[in-house]
Image (cartoon, rainbow, N blue to C red; front, side):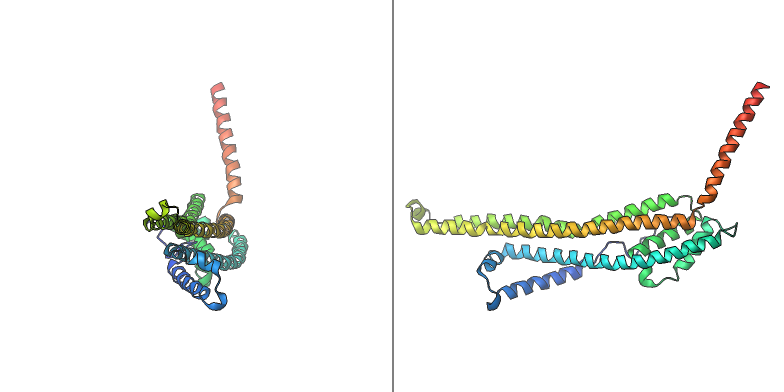
Length: 296
């Protein structure tokens, strides 16, 4: 059997994009529908929200990113609740460790087999949680290897994999935060181009007040798209910061909990300390014998 980790059906920190896009689109339509209703009509909101089609596109990007971040925060709350349940399960595993240690033949590999059997009895929603995926895959890796000698390497590998998955899950948000100000600048460029294209050079040269008002009014509206893009980007980035920090805190909890549980349940720490002392004593004794032989 290959020791390479099978690609799991679900990765930690991954959230489906399609529901966020659909719900964000619906909220964007609802927002523009509401602001056009007479009871909620506000000239300032209308000015910035409908100043240009580019502003509408930036608003759509903002709503999709905001819905995605809210969805991630709700899922994280659910995962934290499941992690609390799993920690109680891990304590039961540690209690079983004292029973297994009564059997001299129960080594780390046999413990991993026993734990994997117990793991299959867990509820599906617990086993498929982010914490559950990490523990289940760690146990499967030890059973495949028939040894726990490389447990620390596996812990590091899975921790790095989940960290990469957590970082990659923000790809859409990062793209949207990049695109919103770019769209704002694009709207400004288009607005300036349209204003200059529609300008009457002769009227402007004659110093006509009407021509000057048209020029300044066009430029006034053109810069609104940049303001909209920058404001929406700032809000989205603040939302991303708080959600990402919460996920990183949960990831650190996951790393500590998985490492502690695997070491307490599988490793032979008590026996390994004794073996290290015995090995050192044997080495000293061998060197002492060699020195005595040289003297003789």
